[in-house]
Length: 331
Image 1 (cartoon, rainbow, N blue to C red):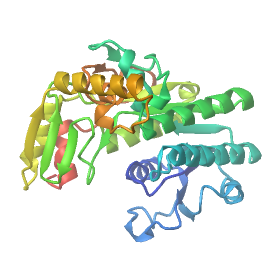
Image 2: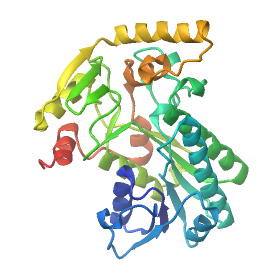
Image 3: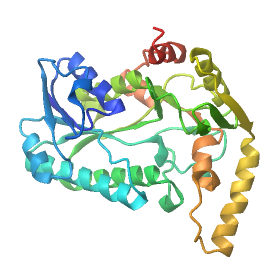
Image 4: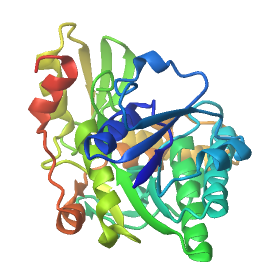
């Protein structure tokens, strides 16, 4: 099997390529023309072909698709305003889908996100799983959530109309080396000043190596076709637990300013109501003042990885403590 991986030089992409190679697959890794090839740890691997191209160029993607059996789509536009992000990512995904069709490639592993759920209308304490309702008002969410919702809808429509064989993965908050902060903690005012919103809500964390292993497991599984999997490690830590475990391991200790979740939520609800009812929604509010985004990040939910374990036999290899040690270089 030959696997094409888009977004191969990204945070998750580097680990996904490493895992695909570890399992012995021929691999075509797609990176941006601006990427620094020297930073790629698997660059000299004998089963790797590196392809540098602009995913907005449909002709180049079709050419790269030759000889491919399966596509793992990780690439994403991450800069620009909301409309730019949504349009840019949809254009890339459309190009990939049409290139697959033109090249008779019918197997896709698509990476979505936990951001797609309708958190504002899910009762606190509920277990979030693959059957949880999706966001019904995307415009009330941030650009990333809107992009992932639109992208997932696009792929599902293409799957239905063109008999594509798709496996969908929705990772939680992915962490690892040089990526240990998560917006589910609160707001990082400066590198050494953190405002932590709430303390006891679970964070649906997945360590990047655990996440990559889960994604690549789909390659050899016919039962994964047509399935959707949430990726979250065992026993997700609370905000307070994750903060404590992280601070234990870093030299420069930040100042933590705790803020009550209920207070922030009440203030955001008032601000949102005033902007919507009195000002016609004219103000562009920061995420911290948008109830739908606040609930997505800080409301008390539980998270399940049972479907992934039962169908693909995945078990996260690294626990929180070991993963943090590896990320900070202590292991």
